[in-house]
Length: 230
Image (cartoon, rainbow, N blue to C red; front, top):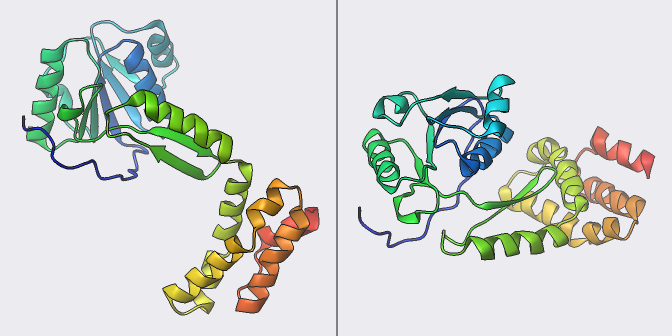
């Protein structure tokens, strides 16, 4: 298989209610399964042996397990495949079979066999940051994640959710992308994140409401509620 010449293209993908297959039943498989379930995937694990944790999830009906060695037949109907066995030959075969069937595949810790790689993820409510080193240094990706977690506080999610409640009105009132960009960028530039970090909540929400009044954008119920609470 040819080595990559270009970096991976960052993308977010919807796996809710999609059939995700993980081949291999060890600790790595358990970590991958837990992540996939967190984002709503229907997970199936194929392996002759599984960890106690995976068995508990199976008993709870959280995922399905096929206690058998890998065969190409298990790829039928899958949206995504992760190969996490300790057998390089099996992992290579899974990658080849998936590519032939045009199924996105990730082979854990073997970057050149992957069609997608899984980033380190920083989550703060509705705000999500994906960190990747292109598979070259997972340790550095973890360090970057830890640094970002210290920087990105709950105020980012609060502002994100609040601005989301203004989008519908902004689209109807502000005719162009440039107008809408100016409106939302202006709110951020007013320093509302710093205000929230400093506990100046009412000042932050009043700044947003003032921007809405000036642009003719309707103040949302969510913003009214924040003003009432502050």
